[in-house]
Amino acid sequence: MAHNGRGIPGFWGETGQLVGAVGRAMGVTLLNLFRRPVTVRYPDVQRTYPDRFRGILALTYDRETGEENCIGCRLCEYICPPQVIKVEMLKSEKRNYAKTFTLELYACEFCELCVQVCPTDAIVMLRTFDLATADRRSMLLDKDRLHALGMQFEPSWATGNKLRDMQAPPKAAKAAAEGAKGDAKERAE
Image (cartoon, rainbow, N blue to C red; front, side):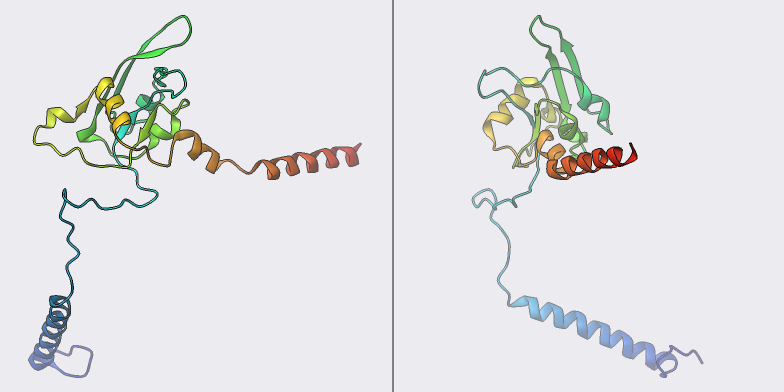
């Protein structure tokens, strides 16, 4: 005779456990049967995104000069784990530009590493995810489409410079540490 650990041996013990599990499951079902549904009728009703929501990627322009921010440094291409970013640099007298910039959004991991390494905040994440399509080829985004997305949707809170500033120690702590080093040098002399 098998023993299930609760003191009720064999067939009747297992049957009791089964009836208890089914009863608990039906209780949860009955509890949720009369609750108001949480379904959002998308796209008629738009959900509000959380403050730190980060969605699809886009390229930006400098608001003052109107020039594109991307300098074609290719840091985003080098750091991208699935290697979905391809950049060709165009050298100019004043500064460099991205001659071509392509992003295979259908294979992007949305890891945000490209945003974090960009020295000019040229690539940002947007506060939207809405690029649904039935054609995979339309998810291959070129420079013009990435710029259009950047103009169409609101950027996320996290640009590369803001993320770097968050990770850097506060300036007051850095100054205090340098002052302590100077005091230690004076005592040693």
